[in-house]
Image (tube, rainbow over all chains, first blue to last red; front, side, top):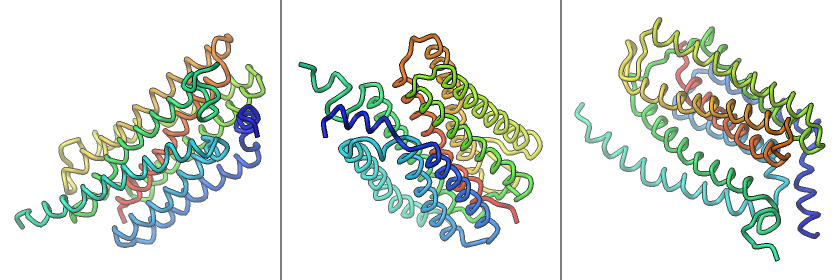
Length: 107
Length: 201
């Protein structure tokens, strides 16, 4: 496929129906999250579930509303692994040090 | 021959404005990630973390804000699709609808802030219910997000006027859309992590 043809396809994006279905899915996940708030789970368990659901919603928004699914795959490779790497580095360096400081806190 | 970095074809089959917006979005993602990671740590390590949000009215109110922001994302999708069809009138109409969504979200958010500050006495440095860190992260993160929404509304207004007058292209509307969807995306993390993790039972 030529570059121009690929660009034309990229600009086509998803149909109105698909975008509406994605929107309904996002609202449904939001209400699922609110329902989970009723369940009074442990904070660490609740946080883990909410982060996973939020990542799913973020992926839906980026793929369809932000057209990333319809862009060249090289753009996805250019943007997403770098961002995930930086966020992982924040986790790797922040949490061990933060929990070490927590244990040093006077009780 | 067109340079590889002049935008439009190579290397990503998109213009330099759109690529620039994607790079901004990734850098802003890291800013919000850092804030939310610090929040998550503070939340888990402070047993006296305040729970100021009862299901009704606070969670119902913030859920309404979430649906309003999601609805504004859908109108932005419609604006981008109309711009790709070169339908200037409908593009501007959908962009104005998106601005109304953004303004409504900001108004609801400010109402909530006023209620928390003046009725429940939560400030950036303290509160009557527990860890004083709550105010710093709550007002810090939601304030940062609200600033993005307000900038987004101004940005939408400028692009809508420019596109309506024929000064901006469909690509400018699409780039504007990327920013707006990013603002929506960030709220998809802020709402569950900040509000639903601090529900009062």
